[in-house]
Length: 452
Ligand code: SAH
Ligand code: SF4
Ligand code: F3S
Image (cartoon, rainbow, N blue to C red; front, side):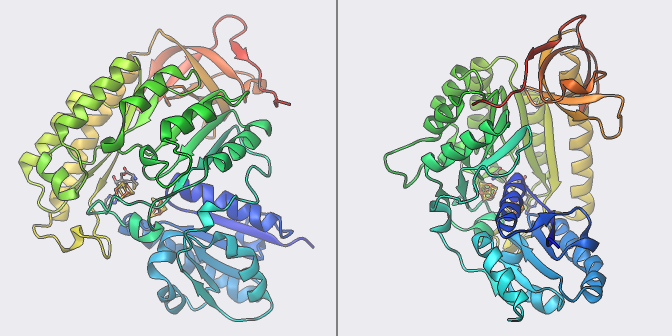
């Protein structure tokens, strides 16, 4: 009987990418995936510790999985990702039924370590950083059948040390993958049917440090954009301080580069931005937004905001509210500040009490929802290009897809449109999605086919 693995993923797209990689590594070992943990011989939990809530979720899942381990002595329970990196052996102590704790640089080691554990070598914790791992070509890159949309990690780690953020500690220093490896992986994915690629890194704009011959992020974007058969190219996350005019130009010039940018601002007040160590002022940020909008009319712009950072006053928060009025984002992810072990902000004075932070978050989200709705309504009556992804989960009578600007559009249509680009007329708008209809005839523009 083929061994089965169940993978649970928390956190960001980079973790999703890593989980895909873990799956490919174990498929090469003869495993197959299952979505039922009770039938699994290997459970891999890929964890996130960006906020305390994310970390708590990991322990609650572990608690729920414990009975499976009691029932099935052959089950190997592995914890990887950022909480594994941060907590290390403490996880083995706290959850005595966990077999393996694997750090963020150790994915390559998953197959041999699982083998060792099966041969009864006890419980293990491997959390050393191995900076060469990311420089080596990935033996599994591009294997398997990708979805319509695929991620490609282009770098690992982060050197920015924003005062609130755990990422530099749990992912290590910033290291770029070799451009040829990135390209080969993207090409393999497109050849196997992916039509949209999203390049991933904590700060993609600083891609290329230490790469010979010199390759910048715009260089990489141009190379990936030239892959025949690729329809859309996105990337995340762009750090505002490193967003260059050259990247803006590249986005404007490359036809497959989608008109969408996630540009996390975090706060609208210069005092808070400074305390966060973000490396830009609100004025510099607003200038970059203006340059983007000028070069890319109709650009979809999204952001992340933290409220209640230590020392944030009502006046500081008012500056954040003012900034969202000026920028008018299409969408926003917003969070209450959360203390993370080892970060500078954790030791800062003047913590904002949870009620105040909660009220600010609520005010921000309420206002942003109205802005998102108003921005979406501007598209009513317009015809947009949509990449059709699937049938709606909650509304199976509808298909769902995204515009180039990353807005969700739902519409009634036949199954065979999944995987195609269609043009749709937008008939109504909510804060989070649009409703479209197929124009009278032949709505689709191009058909999905594998490039030989
Ligand atoms: N590299 C990306 C961010 C990755 S983390 C960037 O620089 O923007 C994703 C988001 O989580 C961040 O943008 C931030 O808004 C939020 N975040 C990170 N640490 C946090 C903390 N300690 N408390 C609350 N939110 C946090
Ligand atoms: Fe964290 Fe800042 Fe790095 Fe983003 S740029 S991952 S917020 S330290
Ligand atoms: Fe979470 Fe790690 Fe990503 S902490 S947000 S999974 S880099």
